[in-house]
Image 1 (cartoon, rainbow over the protein chains, first blue to last red):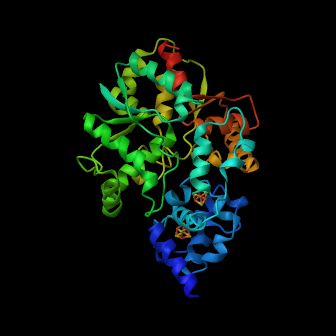
Image 2: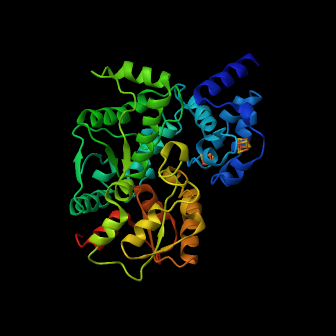
Image 3: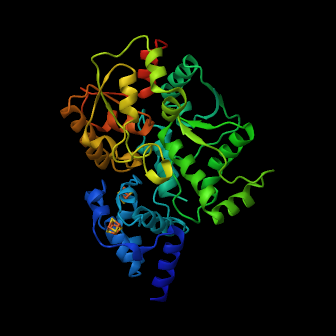
Length: 129
Length: 260
Ligand code: SF4
Ligand code: SF4
């Protein structure tokens, strides 16, 4: 449990999010374009971080499905900014040794002719440390 | 009118047309874009975490050198624009981030967010003016039905980007009118194309991009304009239809100004 609490504190600090502002309206999840691909949705990140359930979030593929589109940030009526929690949980995982989600040597196989540098740079920034 | 200009890495490679036409049009409109001599890749995505410092440094270097030049900083790629504007906002409003960034960089004069960051479209709207652009048009794109594709990064977060109304933007539609075409309004114009998910989950990108294109086509658009190389890629590659052209807004401007 103490491990869980430390991890939750780190996520709160790193994200700067105040989870207590959430009024559970679900608007963030309703507008999330990654909804179908996610196991846990933006509003669940908010209350699961509040409950200290970081391990479940950290083990979920959901953290790699966020598109960083800022829709949940823009449309949350309470200014909670759920995307920042998704980012903070993902960072907590990929900052650990050997936990990169995307290895540099896996990249060539994922490319096609027209894919812009921007896609790769973004993916590396989001998935690896 | 002179500005510092940050092209970014994609505009030097796969996104050359966005840059090339942007420069030609700026010249035609009496705008000087002086490329920053020492820019580095911005990282393409804004590092949201408060404890991410190293990933914000290249944006701050560009901001500080623009300040030292005494000019406003112009970006053209939506992603660079988002990163640089959001990092600038951090430097203005988050004392802890600003302190740590400045400790790292050791600039002669610490940077605290003095630079004004403008997207190229903001230069067109706020510095040149759409009326002046309309007057400069030689080949109006009469009869073309063009949908503005804003995507995410130009608009959001609205309180940081201050680019346009994030839920009801008009800047691209005004641009489309200025070059003589008819803007097509469709619901998905400010929803995500899938972005970088295309790298590892093509199916997800296909879903997002085809939703955008299908919606624009249903509303009668023959063309979509964008300011983002990754949006252009996704809509063309993963959008699943070829009856709607997807082009950079600078290319259409060049066509209209007769400099293409
Ligand atoms: S930023 Fe991520 S979590 Fe938020 S709406 Fe977009 S995809 Fe969903
Ligand atoms: S939109 Fe905001 S207030 Fe509503 S559930 Fe999501 S985080 Fe909570």
